[in-house]
Length: 391
Image (cartoon, rainbow, N blue to C red; front, side, top):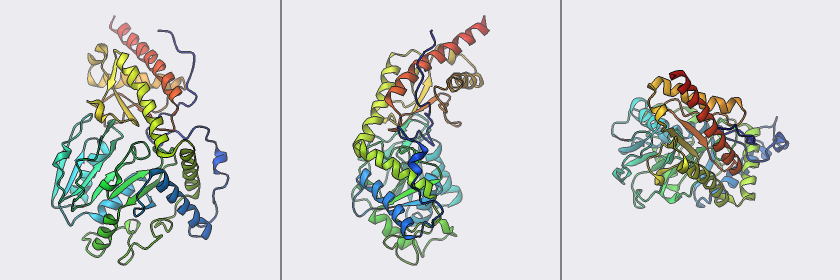
């Protein structure tokens, strides 16, 4: 197979931190409020702006609260679990590395007494119909490490008694979400927005705020200060939106504002979703014609349109010992890294051996199209190398 002559304009296909928005340069940060307190009038205005722009682009209900917290999406999920869980049984759904991690935290570290664990292997979803409306629920919207998404939220009851905590970090801004089904939505703007790492975002419904206020004086475990959103008994206006617990980077805030302005310029949420779906379609058309690659997600309905995970199905590859499979897959991705065509597309360390390609809105469709040609070339090159060794 002839080596492709055209390379990707942006080789960044990492699933986090993800590619910056098209046309981004450091000049986007020239107005960042560096050297100033985030608690100054101007600092609070910037934090309020990023919260309001996120709320507008997402189309959140007016009575939902949104703010920046520490520790990326992980910090936001942990904050919610530590602050809200414990008063009811909890159903937790795990189907890849991070979602199964929330089960570990609930059982091993929070030591919750009544946890129902519903698990599935990579590429599959657990039985979501087992969610009990009288229980609290914790689940991941999109499995970043498995390429599997929850296709809809019909399984969550409108008249539920518990709160629903959703880790939406690689799904929010890329998928249509019925927010009324969710009470806590967490994410990091390093994913679909292509923002910088370390900062998390938490969205709270009125039900979640009420639970947080009720639980404030009843929490049985020591509560780290960085998780204490509620002071005394109430989450006061502005206390989430622009009075952050920790000191945020105003450079990162400025970068997020820039990404949100770009999102608005391409049609807001609908534009973001359309770009991501268009990128996925390129891979779907390619996979349909390929004899060596397939999706890790077992059905199209649950196939992620952001963190697209692929498995190698070629006979020569399947015949290799497991350790050699990992080496062969690494050789394919390393070839593209060396050529400057695609960086960081190896599968997650704990996931099945394969390839993972970020297809969020900040990635250009034309680059995905070019990448598929290079993937075919890299696969063919490595296949021939192994065949030569056998001879």
